[in-house]
Image 1 (cartoon, rainbow, N blue to C red):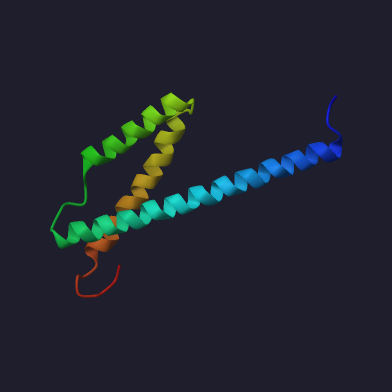
Image 2: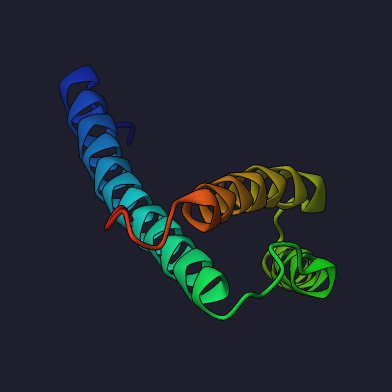
Length: 106
């Protein structure tokens, strides 16, 4: 027996609510990741370290590809997503590294 239109709509709304909760957690996790990138930039600046770490970018992409393969997610999607995330992390690190140590900015 199929659900009534009202039941179907209620189920769809419940699924949308579930998706909204997942999106909220995802966005908070992304914010935490970017905050960590800022702290990495501060650490690199303090210790005179290089911004670019190609081995690290490669590692992150390989982990994302493996995760995609293990979980039935299209690899190209995660590769594109992580390229954006890595680009933003590098931008934040560079911004922090360019900031004068005496300015108090983070």
